[in-house]
Image (cartoon, rainbow, N blue to C red):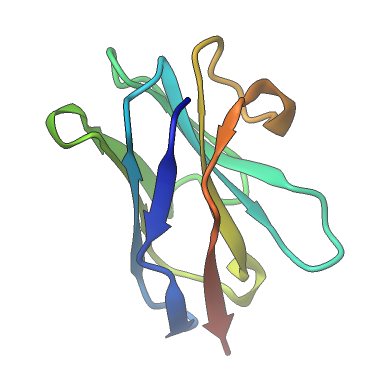
Length: 120
């Protein structure tokens, strides 16, 4: 079973930056970041294939967020720039051995989540 542990969450002002990290027990075919705000459905933020490094982003974060990975360190990152209040949510790291979509149902393993709060 794949274990995932997120870190790097916190509170920042609008326009600021934050870098999330996900330490994985092993790197699967695809790693992703998801987020869930109060009263909202969990949505895909970004995903990356471990081997090739191909990336996908939700339109709401494209151009502001960057997903990357360090395979040697079994770590996935999410660099978040130009943060907006609407980015406030619990962010989850996820992993799957098949596919690399931004659909939560496609992922088998999940971290505990880390809170990101953006104030105006």
